[in-house]
Amino acid sequence: MRLPIFKTVRILYLSFFLVTILFCHNCFADFRFGVVGDSRGESKDEAINEETLRIIFKQLKSEKVEFVVFVGDMVYKSENSNKSLERWKEIV
Image (spheres, rainbow, N blue to C red):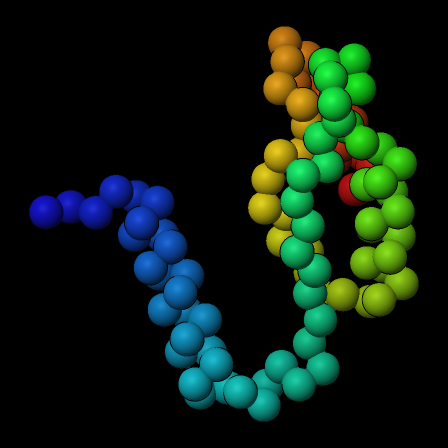
């Protein structure tokens, strides 16, 4: 039985992190990262919550995080989603 690709990828990521934690628990003593999600706006006219997104990334920069994981819902889905996503990338 083949696992769907997303389950396979999830298992690989989990395995990587478990191995990293087990064999390199002191490697990341001063390591910082951010997890962010749901920066979309409330309508197709306001596809990105720009004010909140700018505040979040300003805080992340001030905290000197090593990297940021964005878990989804970046822009409000509409016929202009590609333009909105490009605008999101400019802000970030």
